Amino acid sequence: MNFLCGVNIECFEQAGIRLLFMNIIRYYPIAALAFVVFWVAGKRLFQPYRILDWFPKAERIWFEIRYSFWTLLVFVALGLFSVLLANLGINKIYVDHGKYGLWYLPVSFLLLTVWHETWFYWAHRAMHTKFLFKFLHLTHHRSVNPSPFAAYAFHPLEAVLEGIYLLLFTLVIPVDRSIVIFHTFYAMILNIWFHSGYEFFPKGFPRGTITRWINTSTHHNLHHSRTHGNFSLYFNFWDRVCGTNRPEYEDYFDEVKDRTERLLGERAAERSAAHQR
Image 1 (cartoon, rainbow, N blue to C red):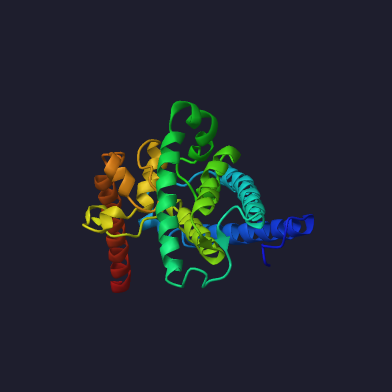
Image 2 (tube, one colour; image 1 turned 60 degrees about the vertical axis):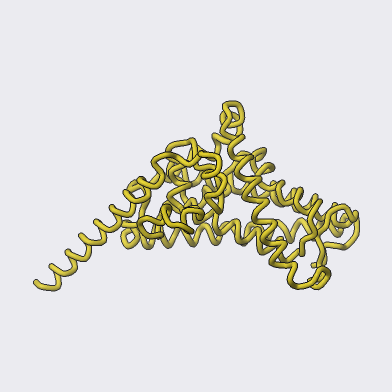
């Protein structure tokens, strides 16, 4: 569908259906796949990689699924508003890949990623002020040990703040529609992963010269279980610069990995003993 189809009801009906389908068909199946693979079918197999060794009750997971739907509706509404702005010539989304040269596509993706990281950190940090946390962000933090479905489990007003960064970016910076679609997919995947409850990066990862700047699933899981600190998204830049990493993060990460190694060692010993019988 060409979203530059004019300011008319038919255009927005088609765009709304397309956006709703795209959001739901991307989010729920991928979050469900992560849930089934790690939390159901592979529960015992991947148990050594759990960050917390307990699982939330079913009603908490259903809560996350329900609130995710409201977030998806908010994202659709923001998308429709972006379509309106595009058709009015107000925002800078374009469809001709060569308009600014192919070299500009990765550049615009990088700019969008940096902007999203910055917006998310400061908006997230603001959400932890007393008033906003109580009336908005607490909805998300009710998941102390989140499942993949917690990725989009926001209060609807917080969902607006979570999604509006993209609308603001496209008012200022030209960006190809395909980059917007790829960025939102990439962001969704990482968001689901950071709420998965599992850690596969090796011990010492947050201490590496380069890897210390990359966030981990443990980083965000710790934020959920202990409420404050660890506000950043993809990268550990703003938390390190502003001193808002939880002080125990790196040691806690290594403790999680020590438990992983211990459990894997015990499992290997059991297999070896069974084989010798």
